[in-house]
Length: 230
Image 1 (cartoon, rainbow, N blue to C red):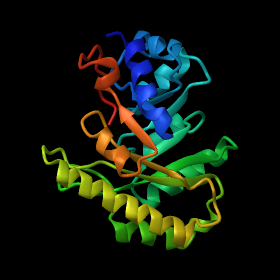
Image 2 (cartoon, rainbow, N blue to C red; image 1 turned 180 degrees about the vertical axis):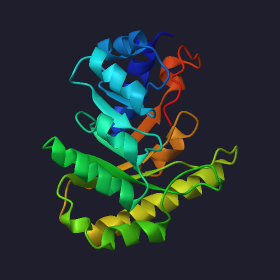
Image 3 (tube, rainbow, N blue to C red; image 1 turned 90 degrees about the vertical axis):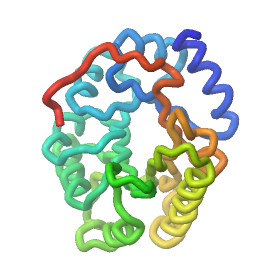
Image 4 (cartoon, one colour; image 1 turned 120 degrees about the vertical axis):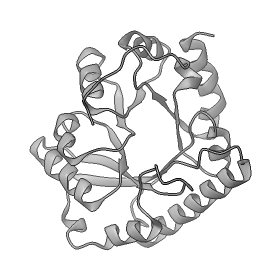
């Protein structure tokens, strides 16, 4: 199946459920992204700043670029002029830097707070308590150039569907509580980014509004490696 066919089939499957598709294009060549773009895909996810910036320069400007990987504060300035959504905010320090760089470009950058839900030490993210602490932190309400529009979480890489389901359920429950406590009057707080190629169907069942799919679209092949970025 072609990239275009994959896009068409996935969109038919998830968009009727009001779920958005983020095509994870990290390590994929510009040609593959152009094929997905021609098939109607406009939202792409990258985890390396240098790679995203290079692709931004070469590709149509109506693409919405999502930063989906761990983001170092010293790299924010490279994507601040154009990034559409930063899905991986995992500290107040990072949020402050995004606000600072967004201000320089007279932008408001949408962000998701990444919540740690997996039973794995290798994953990044804030604990439930840390999310609440960040939202209550002195100075948070003074940041006018960032907008928290939801939460993101990555489930444990396991064969246990029950465990994955429970982790997504807990994040959806937490999302609802945060919405009620901190963003009740803000319609913009509505995104729950959960689900990747192996578990997106479970994520959608548990309330995801946005799934991040790569191999389901582009296949497993890796064309190009970007070095010395992180």
